[in-house]
Image 1 (cartoon, rainbow over the protein chains, first blue to last red):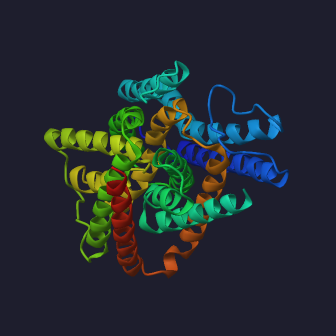
Image 2: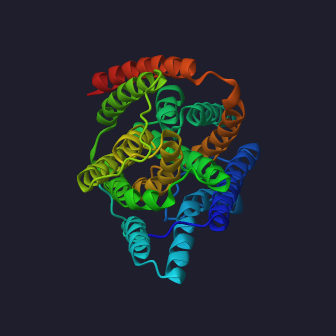
Image 3: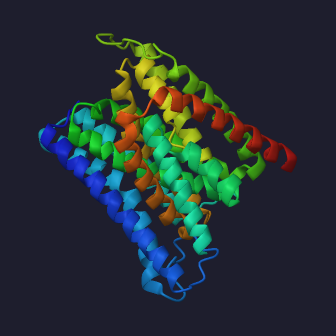
Length: 118
Length: 258
């Protein structure tokens, strides 16, 4: 199975740090701005029904986008690792990455289909 | 609103600080803080805990990867397959459980966490595993335990490090520091499928998620800077006592509400 080179490990590490900081700053900054503007943020979930609706739509959109960015960051590293494995022809690594992506895609699909267990 | 944001940021800082010093995701601090101090329902607190886990995982694993050698990426992805599947199962199953039941489960997890802290604080708690190979049976045991850690992560909003680190170290023979770093790398990927379940039930409150994540990042950075100057053994024992008190309080609330 593939082991990443130090160069690719550096790239994965930079993506993890930069992605998480960007997501957190975007989300926390937007929430702070909304609080300063006196917007009502009670009962404001991240939902596919539209977390950005209501007043200050751009700020609301940014707050949710930041969290989506934070969640997408580790998935991006997984995809990049999979691409590297594909290029170098490491079959077992490709299968592992595809398996992990299938689990994440299943979770997103369940969310999209609105599967609620309660 | 301002008070809620300030309290959430403070809770996040505490979770990030303690998490980075103890090698945990921070969820084990963030969830009881959000539930017992901020007063939000358990399902919402667990969703916030997963955001804390994501934040700590990305920040810490990113630094470990750039430093090189500490994270066993190959092994991480292998066992992550089972942890992520567990995360998905936990994230869906939690919808069937009532808040008080979750509180009792979380209290039990905190008790285990306190024992884990005491055990690792003792000298010689880490085992020399250099050069040991991993037989197939132990590998299957590790996969099963990582699945359980994933389910716990999805159910309770924690990173699962209290289970994954011992599995990587004792079952898969990874050196202790490498096990901690590899567990940090895995936590983020476990949290993603778990979080999807909470989002589908509209349980991820955006007014709390961003401020909590920001607090966690700041706390984790402070913790990493202070790490070389503090005696983690003493801190672990103090943290074990705090976990014990929080576990009793959470169990009391859960039992009273049942």
